[in-house]
View 1 (tube, rainbow, N blue to C red):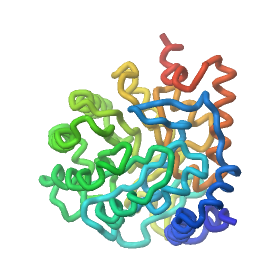
View 2 (cartoon, rainbow, N blue to C red; view 1 turned 30 degrees about the vertical axis):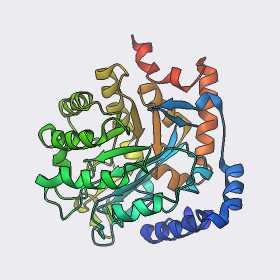
View 3 (cartoon, rainbow, N blue to C red; view 1 turned 45 degrees about the horizontal axis):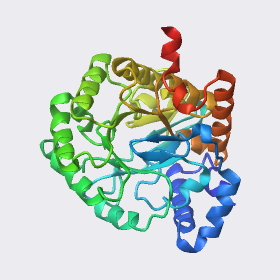
Length: 364
């Protein structure tokens, strides 16, 4: 029933399909549809004690989560767990509601198993998300991805992030500082340590270690810049790092044009298969610098159990998907979880936690 709305029509307008999907999922999240959610959970869910773990005091039934960007306004948090996810991240949310960038702004690069987006943090704002999350009934961790409002000057970014955090602090299980989207002017400059430090300082002063706070970084950072952010994350006692956001690189793509324009001339970030190798490399760099002491959520190009396993053994404690779910359909999470369980058994690991970063131990 859901597949034609959620995952088909690759030639149709992707943003229209997404908005239709969100209407369906919002309806399924209503209290009256609890029976349908139970049916979906029996169809798409998969339980394995080997794949569960406790991180930051939160119970993750499995390591596969839905990345930010799919459910920007938290309308589907009650139904998304029924598709097998072990956690869900909503947002990106900004303090001020905003429409985002002009359309068209979302494109599927089918030949590359990728998506190009320049949405621009379109969302209804932190106050609307606050009201909606009060009605959540999901039994998995819900993260909140925080972004800077477009109308807020860069020099006031810390207060903007802080305002959203204050509204949502009691409702999210963990929070993410998103300074790596390429679709808000100047946002990526906040990844420089001199601009990122005031944001982290303000949030952690307010937080008082109550909620896990992470930072999401871009795959396009140089090695020394990644190392500087990791050092800053450790200094401010962040709970972890999300690696990575979308890429602005265009090399190696099979898709050469969009709407008759050269792919190099189309603004936006690319997700999916083209970012897979680089995101895994960034995970590996972070793990090596911290020796596994700073948890990593790995995201970028995960379509299969093999893709997820590669990131886990490189050092990721949790995995997020988005583009792969769009292409592979609602059975993807279950297939990945079954595949991960098989890999644990073949590799001789007692549980998922034992496999995290294991590729580094082999090298040593």
